[in-house]
Length: 110
Length: 115
Image 1 (tube, rainbow over the protein chains, first blue to last red):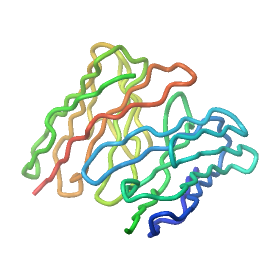
Image 2 (tube, chains in turn red, purple):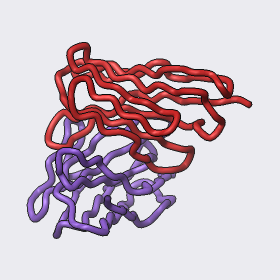
Image 3 (cartoon, rainbow over the protein chains, first blue to last red):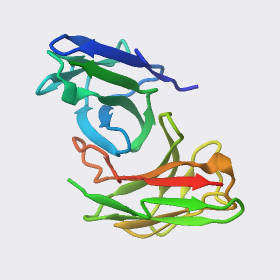
């Protein structure tokens, strides 16, 4: 059974701190997505990681992919309150078919 | 990029009835999908909406319960049939142009409450 697991499930962090969200998956894939979801909203695409060793950065967020370890990370640098949201990783397991991780609810406190 | 709209944005329905959700994309996309997000949960793929042919359903989802149409490259509908309270969820459609570096875009979702 395919599993895409994130940890932690919930993260409370202070502004200015750094932290990493982990996404582990149980099957081979060369494409992994990260999305952000605000309460009551749809999904906003953050990153598409296409190959082993891929690293992408946007603002305070940086995502990486290690296909050999079946692991992706989303690193948050110097968190700000506006980053509070739920973050999902999603693994492409067929032609554009996505299996989503469990989600990590991030709360950045002032 | 693609902008995806859905109608209705939310609805409250009685058990045993059916609801059809519409999904419109502002540009042609190669593939369209329907997902379900139960309260406080992650997203689960229901089916791939195939243009001009029957949708491809994931395990646990069947055509009789979730009939899907996709008459052209920019439009799809999902019907939730014979609803029960367990069908209360957010239903999202998504689309992708299929190019290697392109992300998958999601609609705003339809919030369904079944009483």
